[in-house]
Length: 218
Image (cartoon, rainbow, N blue to C red; front, side, top):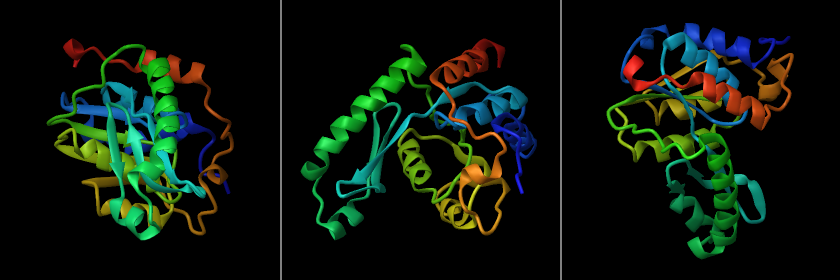
């Protein structure tokens, strides 16, 4: 059984659960591209809050790329899980080729999506981090850890659908987790959408252009 027709509908349903943040001048919505952007655009519109992207690239183990030991993110943020690295016998030097490749891709996406705009100031802000769903939550956890270095007043992770284990894990590291549904068994994020086609760069750029709210209007 599908829960959402598409990411836009999911975003509207998610926004309904974030209404307490509407109209505030200290709220910013950060989307994890690409799939999180259509969801976040609906949240941004409903709350009257500016929309931006937090580009995150996972740093995987050399022999198992899907197993993350850290992440790099927009604004020059980087988090490495040194404890896990030590357990696996990994050094920073052994990750350098991966870091270089992922940094290159992050810069490409940063240049494309932000177009020269500086990363927003997060100090003292309520930051709502949005994605289209969470399976393990590992990348979101790394993104949140990186965001903490920017001094936000409150970090809220908001997604339409997630596994219960991901929500439980993130609930320990953020101020709030807002999720429309936590179905079990989970299977995967895309299972719960009728339309889960890949979001294009053109769609991301269009949504970001419409989601910008000038500070003077806030």
